[in-house]
Image (cartoon, rainbow, N blue to C red):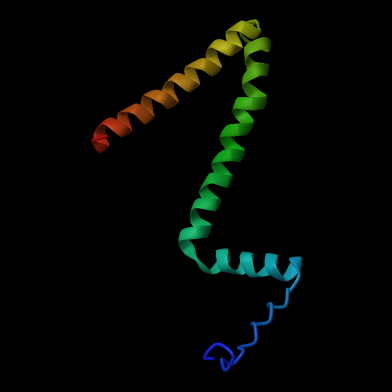
Length: 98
């Protein structure tokens, strides 16, 4: 019987886990030495801190304290942001030919 004579090949052993901290260290090292990874992370991190904080913290205070407006007016300002984002996305999509 041909199947009875077949040699058994041992299954490969599972790789040993290095642990969570070693995996994190390897991931951070990869990001640190790869410019096309760390540059966008840096840009988006800075813009998130500078723009996100001003929209989320300063805009409600400015709307209430300086313009003496209500929550409905703040909602209108937030909708204007969304309208601008959608307009920019539509313009970019139209230029790309989609």
